[in-house]
Length: 112
Image 1 (cartoon, helix red, strand yellow):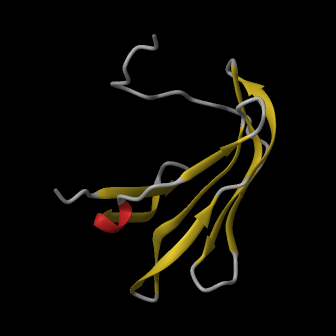
Image 2 (cartoon, one colour):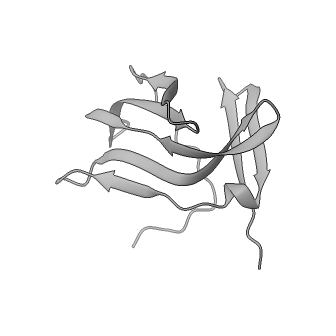
């Protein structure tokens, strides 16, 4: 069985920035948490980045800093998205000052 994944990224949920599909996108990742179970980093060694029309093997991570409570949830306060496909980490997004959190997940199983 061939697994296929997808990464869809939209700016402001309107403008498509990335829409990659295929077996390259069906990857595994490691989530690191602190002693209280809060996320500290999410990383993978088997992503791909499209660079000048070529899919290159990519190390990808999203380190998080601090936590805050929003909409009754403890969420990371700051974070970054980092690509490293050539040995030089490239921060392509920095996240901070989250003001709103909209939960719009559908079809999730009920919690036990």
